[in-house]
Length: 122
Length: 211
Image (cartoon, rainbow over all chains, first blue to last red):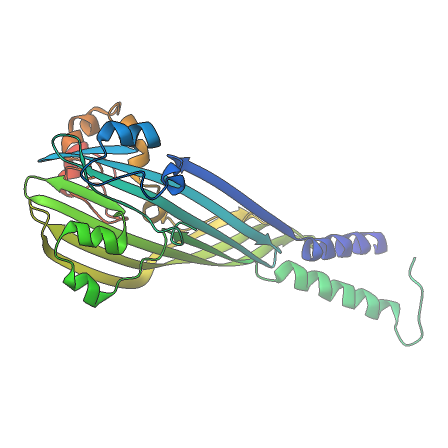
């Protein structure tokens, strides 16, 4: 009886004391090479579609519009932190997107572009 | 072997142990799962109202989270969703040892979204910013005690953008979906929809999805 009691007590205490932490990270999409581009690498009205492709690679999505095309680049990074205390557990998943978008006219010349701000991508 | 200290009788010690075991076994197994989808976007109403075309909107807010281009013009959607799932559980113990817990959960969604519409020349036609907080889903489950897994069904609010699957989606094996490809809302030319919109409505009805 006493041995059983001690065993049960030990198991119960172990479950309360034993804590676990988890951490995961995953990445998806096109790696954000646009972060490393020098300021003068892209010039509106001059840079062509093929130059953007050469520098950044294939986009995540190509959208055709009435007077040209849009290249849409997307990089997704998700990280999670978890705490398992049995009595109370928590898990926090943080998903961040880094985007870049390029508008070209019918001649394949860059009309406008934008990238998500560096702080926002953190 | 127990040793007897003055003032503490063996049956008292056993009672304390038993009480501890019961306490540990019955303590609620509560969890909180928080999911932040997308980075916060700050909207300065006055500057946004002054933005006349898509160039200025891009300068202000960066690339949209979703966009669609059609004959009538272009639509940008900026969206951020925070999901909080609170779980309350009870350890289901047997002989003082708990392996499973019964869990009830409620999911709350905090959503911020901005829709900007442009005409064929890229001039700003309309915009609307909205914030919304409310219950997203409820759920209950029997889980193993070491698990911290979501119980509520809110995957439609946190799913990855379909942009990742743009090329692959062109090879969609499900025929009703493949035939409806041109009208799909993630194609970039069939319009856009918010996260969490049921897929069995609107222009996706022909895809014969179950939900």
